[in-house]
Length: 478
Image 1 (cartoon, rainbow, N blue to C red):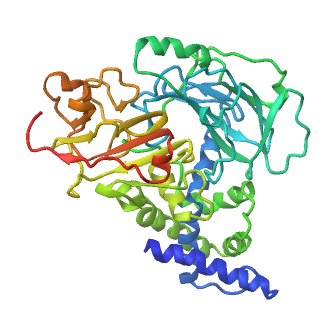
Image 2 (cartoon, rainbow, N blue to C red):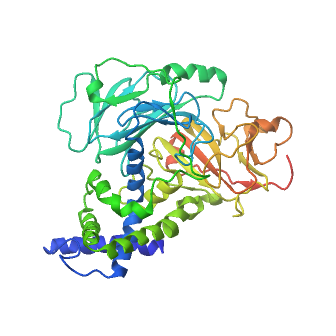
Image 3 (cartoon, one colour):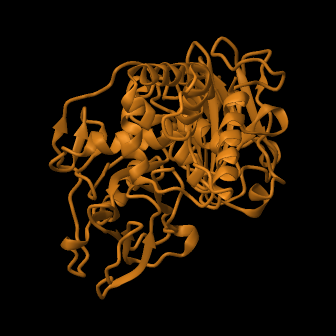
């Protein structure tokens, strides 16, 4: 079904392009009667294609009435549009706003409304500490390079929308132009898993700030993020909070498309969708067919993409990855798969991601079994920044455990090495014996996934020469 829908996107896009070339209409002509089958096909294809953009757009709507930086439920950072909020520590395990969070970095967030104002990005002096500001547009494509891997100097940078024609003031070191009016910024600042580093990171976090251009005075600002108001909790279950509502998708889509002008070659695609939406304004039945198509596509095509084993570039030992994170272009399939399973991934030069649902033999990872991953001597992930292995439950969130440990890697000071320098990690529900407890990543009782991050990866990772070791189901208790 998914293949048919994606093929549908391409077929009617190409057909429309041909029609434009010949001087014909890009969409269905004028008062042409549209069959239910055609409307359903367009509706499902448009739902799959637009799903990530609708997701990000609704996150913007969710922040539009926020009056000051604070924490939703005392956990999730939020702020007025074009302003940021930073945490002071790892994200709490109860977080449900974004699937696949990590506890390697201190997060922040800023929802961009660049159609309202350019935004100043303040970069403090991070010293030798790893950091990166992820900045993506409505399509979840990156349009900024700010981070340790880019050698970004401290100072001020400006984010502007696609139509901004102003002149940046003195003191702005570089201007980055988005292709859409809406976007997202997620600063990530690494910290070691020690009390000493938690205290040490606070100073630089206070200077991680974003704000509208009108507030720029050329001076480094500072904010104490430890004193934030708490807003009502919005969690609604074990999975990610809902950001796409299929029954409302086609009512919202015109506003979403206004925020994201067509990419080159997408003009006909937009025209086809808009022609059906125009017909739906005049015919309630067409809108009903479109709405049902959105509901069906969300359930039948998008929802299965939560599982990593259903998509991605396939690697040895059942691992998978992506090579175009935050640069999806017209790879609509991967863009939607990532948005459903782990939205807001970094570009590969910033972070390489490896996903795993299965053990070496192809069995589903489950807490009823015990597993090991062994990195041979000198074969831990080759990075300039850091690496980590995170465990997620079946919904792609942290699984509660007695150690409050959700990831393990560079940040872990007490990892025990084997003879010759090998490193074995134990993934299981019960603790391993003796000193190997330091290498234990606690698992839940049910299904789970493993997620390896390599921040600022070296060439061996980017060119595919290095891949993670197999996840081996153990026959005995260590």
